[in-house]
Length: 78
Image 1: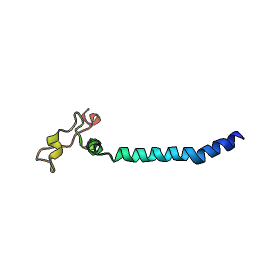
Image 2: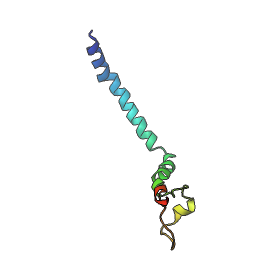
Image 3: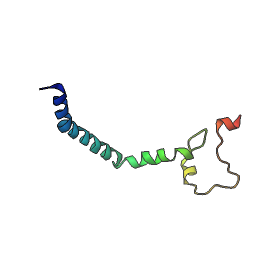
């Protein structure tokens, strides 16, 4: 049997199964019960302060208080 034909048959049968199982594993990993906290933390990265992570108290605030300023980048402070 030719090498190309052997690899083609392997790709059509077993590799298809392996890649499908890999896909199902990724989907299960993403939607596992403990993942929501990790994804919530990652989703809030843009709202953290420039020098330190936002505290839980800062995350709970819905509206900015008087005198609050947005975090400045390090380049803007120079």
